Amino acid sequence: MVSVPVAATPSGVSNKVSWPHIAWFGSLLVLCYAPILYRMGVQWATDENMGHGFFVPLLAGYIAWQRRDLLLAEPRTPNLWGLVLVAGGGLLSVAATLGAELFTARLSFIIALFGIVLYLGGTRCS
Image (cartoon, rainbow, N blue to C red; front, side, top):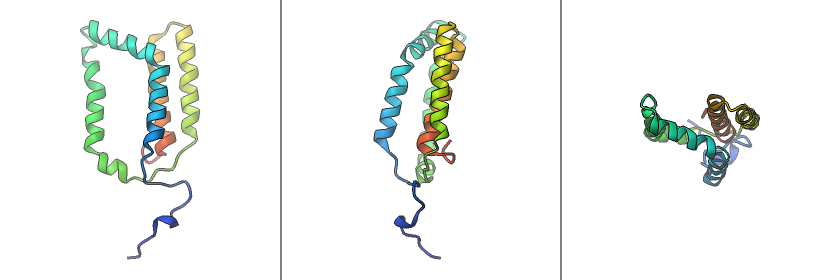
C-alpha cells in the first residue's frame, strides 16, 4: 500500500478543524439570531408541550461528541453553496420577522446553521 503525503492532497481539502472559523460563524449566528433564540427559549420554559426543546441541542451535541473521531477524520472541502444557504436563511429570517412568523424565523436558523456546516465542512460533513 502506498502512503500519500499530506502535500499531495487536492487544493482546498483539509483534515484540520478551523476553530477560529467555527467560533466566528458560531458567534455571528448566535448574535444575529439572539432575539429568535431567546423567544424560543422562553416558549420552551413556559409551554409544557415544548419543555423537551432544551434536550434536543444537548442530545445532538452528545451524538456529535460520540462520533467526533469519525467527523474529525473526514476531509473538509469548503462548499460555497453553504454561503448561499446562510444568505437565504438570513433573508428568510428578515421576512419572518417582518411578518411576525416565529416558526419561519426558527426554520431560518436551522437553514443558516446547515449552511455554515456545509460551508465549513463540505458535503461529506453535512
